[in-house]
Image (cartoon, rainbow, N blue to C red):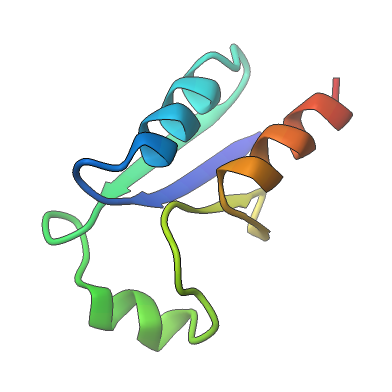
Length: 77
């Protein structure tokens, strides 16, 4: 499973998403931090519809934010 998270500093939901993702033993996790690994303009150019953080993709499928990611992971067990 490949998990890609776009997060930002001082974001509790981003931290929770990162913890949940890294707790998956078989997952390949890539955490990208705003203004370090990407700019907001780059994110919006690639994914025009995103407006909140974090934004999470699993196996190149957009899942949404932390709430949706948590539900997704609970349903894939």
